[in-house]
Image (cartoon, rainbow over all chains, first blue to last red; front, side, top):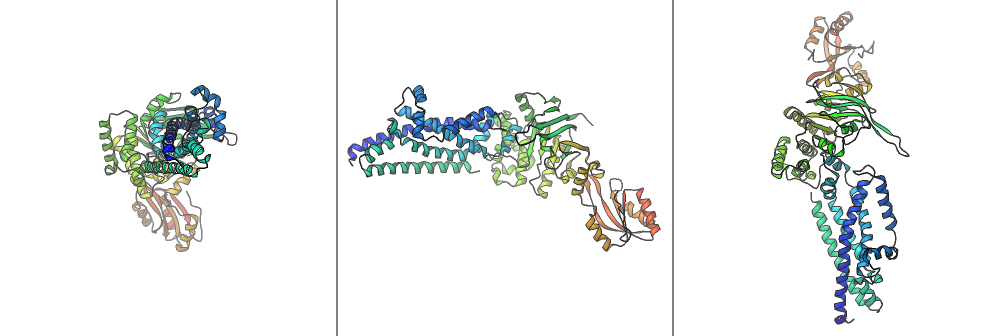
Length: 218
Length: 353
């Protein structure tokens, strides 16, 4: 192990992972929330019940989610090319991750909202609140704690996905562990990367739990 | 009756069926007027359609045929934006309270004021005033989960009154509460009605709720209103079977068949059920009539309570004396009030009038 040369490369890999994960969390969080709310609201019997929209969203998510991520990368290739202009590199990879993360988070959001008492939504309607106001002031605040935990879960899932960034030339910690650890038979490097990831995951999970507990203090 | 504030005209609500479920006529051709300023009860067993009926008033459910007119506005065919305005002028409270757990008590009461875009300063003052009115001003900063059921419903009432509605809808508002708390909440609803002049519509399956606060009542069964009338009339002369069952559950003043059998073992004399109403008021006139006829009366069963602030109930007497004196006494009593002659243990008669 030659940390003098590996050290800076490790830092660079960590930076790449941070970049990919951060953008994916923002994009996946946003689109996941929007799609998840869409699923919940258009569900039969709910505020904006719409059988067609609900069925379309539901089918898309059910079709895409079970596809193994490494195959999904190849499958989404043409779309990735249109959106990012390339089919490899960190931007292209981040795009693919964002799509998958949106689908995963959408389902988490929907499930947490379905668990809410429909009575509070009815009460808000009875007070003359519009659907958009109900989303902002009832649905999201009432489901905040599980949404925070779901988002924490999403972070770990995204970090997991980012490990195969090397497959698309996106770099990152996963790539670093494979290239400098696994392929060099250097178990120490692999172990070091794993330790970094475990520590980060622990810290984020602690943060998520703490925030969720604060949101639940009622 | 004064100008109705709520009128249903042949109003129906049909929930369409699916592949495996049949369509449901939750509300079936209801025509009903509710007067401004009254406390109106809608009673029925669960599934009778009363919850759907009350939701037609604030258009949480839309009629599939017929019309609902609220405060002069026909809700039929109104757009969603207009309906939101109508809803904002009607308060509603719920069996499960439906408070926002993410907000404090004060935050919950402020919610409808935010919807109605009140300025913050006025909002705060109004919230304080409302919490004062329902008697939980000290709980302003508490979370709903820290409150008892009765306190939660007080928050619900404060929230429902926030925007000065003319109508308050109470959907089984006391069904999750114990009898003591139920009375407190009903008393509060009575104050809402009397002090603020708000028309209150109470949905319930408990006849006691009707007995305690309602001026008039509609009895529902299978989506239809089967009987309407003043609360006292409904109690004293129920017409529909379902109404009779409800009345029977409220005041168990008449002996059941099992009780009657035991009474006959204990009391060999003639048993009569004598109605107590606003005319008789008490047993004074009754015992006077009986003694004058040379009969010795003893109360063996019964109960008297108030319905719509008037005395209501019945007492079962054992009459002891010569047969012809007893017959004469019963004859004279019939001129005063309703009498059911149960006969004696040796010669039992049906006697239910």
